Length: 301
Image 1 (cartoon, one colour):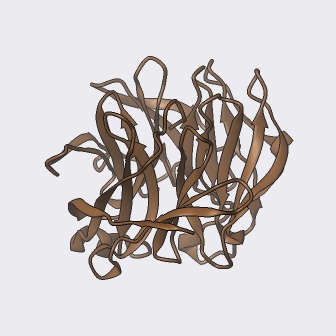
Image 2: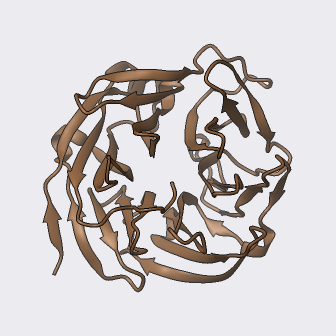
């Protein structure tokens, strides 16, 4: 039996919200098309942490701030989606941390950072916004020394999206959006990936997007085409679901566990993903929260 949890709207007025993260007592996310990283307090007040809207891309690409993560020293990493660059913000300045233009075949998407500072980056595999058809692509890995490589050992993924690491650091999971599947891999001590397997098939055409893990190894995933967020066990049993009201929230895309005890589920929602200017102008993106029974513990992000 699936338990339904009622969410509450925390904050609104954004374009398309993504990549919810809890770090050092604060909740962070990306306001994609406004090209910024934002924190929101428990009162719903939003503060811009990094504003990339004035950034000049080397090849004139639009600046879209996608996935984020934090290095062990606290610096903030930001995926600049169409530039295919990983940017780093030290609290004062923003610079390039890793150049993935020679490795990424498509816009880069989400990321997770392990305890050693190794970064696993997903990419769409195709340019959704240019009308291309979905195709497979590999994960990208940035080593703690800043060098980057293609994670060929893991194979190819159909629209790899949200990505997370279990509390024990031994398993990586990612959403393969275009086949509605969550896939798991084992992580070796040197960061290499193996043992690929299906964690859960979450239903045809549900499009799992952003996800996170709790300390029991269950995945919370936003099902972008199904209007809900689910907690699913390995094997596919759904134990809990949260349904932000579609009329107020639009599409539920990504989720992350935070709060003092990491038992608050933060949900990113939005109405307009394809028309960037409309998304910014309307400002209908929002953040919702829901109390959950199991803490994230040491799961990452």
